[in-house]
Image 1 (tube, one colour):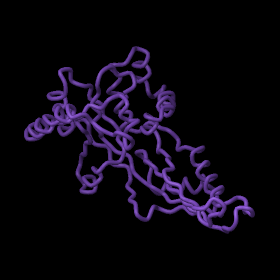
Image 2: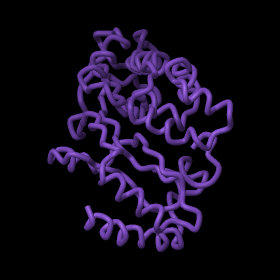
Image 3: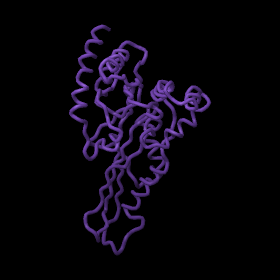
Image 4: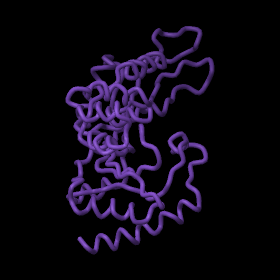
Length: 267
C-alpha cells in the first residue's frame, strides 16, 4: 500500500464488476496482393486503439475513500494533510492513483484487450477479425453504461460489439459495512493470528471474485480476504508465470480461519 511501512491486511468491502465484450469485423477476404483498406485487422485494431486511448474517467468511490482514510494515520505529515482533506485534494489523489497500473484499478473501470484472432495464412486476407476486451467495472458504473461507452468510443458501425456468448457478466457489488460486527470479527481475527506485529487493517476494493454468488443470495455484508502473506512482486505473477504462495505462508494462514469461526460465534 502507498506509504505503508510493514504489512497491510486488505479486507475487500466491495468488488468490481466483470464484463468481456466480443468485438468483430467482417468483410471481403482474398489475396494479400489486393487488400481492401482498411482491412478487417486494421479496422479492428483501430477500434481497440481508440478504446485504449480513451480510458474511463477516474474517480474516488466509497471503497477507495475508506482505504485512504485508514492508511492516513501511518503516512508522513504531507500525505496525512492531503488525505485528511480529500474535499480539496481529491482530484490530485485520484490522478496519482490512476498513474499507477497497480492502483488505477481502484479508481476507474479498466479496459484490457486479451484475445485477438484473425487469419491463419500469411498471404490471405482474413474475412473476419475478432477480439475480446475485458472490463473490470468500478463501483457506480454499470454493464449497460460500459457497453454504451464502448460503442460511442469506437464510433464504427462495421465493428460489432456483443457480450461474450460463453462468458458471464456481473455488476459491481454493494459496499459492505465496515462499522458492523462482521467486519470487526474479520479484523480481530487478523490481529489475533497474523504475525507478531499485527498488520494494518485496510478496507479495499477487490477485483471480481466468487463472492458474487453470496451477493446474489442477498447476503447483507460480504467480505473478501485471504490470510496469506504475499511478496512484493506477487502482482506481477498473478495469473502468470510461477503464481504461488509459500508452504510456510499457507500454514501460517490456517489459524486465521479457526479464530474467525470463534469470533463469529460471539456475534
